[in-house]
Image (cartoon, rainbow, N blue to C red; front, side, top):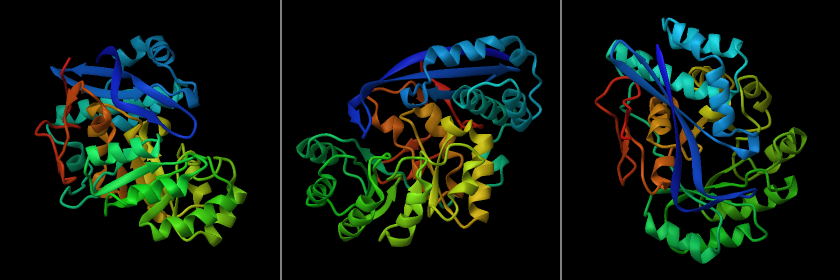
Length: 337
């Protein structure tokens, strides 16, 4: 295989704020793996919360470039095992794993969902995320993008007031994500108010390691609770049983499609709802997520919708939430620049 790395700075339509950070741009690394005239594409974004930069990922991958190029791609799973044994960060592994899966599908001439035996006839629609801002600005962003399902980022001292204000302007279903900003008591109290306002579930209200607090929340919350920061890698899935009603899998954090598929299977055996989320990726990362759609209860794959301009073609999300899968095999990705 031949490998090429491309660095991009993605500009967002609006400043994107959550409880712990704000940004106007998102750095992302695109991995291109080529073999026999076909090229597969993968992506990982930088993330200050996990101390991941484009430079750190690039250095890791360059460090084993010769080994990657000498690797015979018999299966994405074997390639993922090889990368794990090389000790790369999960973010770097994700970009490589997504590229290998895309390449593998293109070499086989089939979309990944078909190779895996998934039927795309039924799937959840993605939410559209409204980042933290003034209430006026959040209302403005919501009106700018009429959508049947919104994720509302929270973590302020007036969270319920935000949701009340947004509810005045839409009948859409809401989800809320506190990104670790609440206490158990706040979560329980907020859950009853938020349920009245048409909120479907609460994502990661407590700090990631506060599993004891989550027991109390699970027992008393009026709404289901979905783990995000508490569910990073495969071994975390079992820890979430009894503490959360479901999990949100991020490909960048777990290391790509290969471990994500195992996490989905494990979560289902434990009776946990399954969501896959994005990290403001371009259509490269979003098209990879789309291959998992038939296996999911919920999905947050609006990353490319939040950008001023995209760098790739692939899956298309229409205004009613319907997904148009690409004609290209693999994840169906073609880089535009």
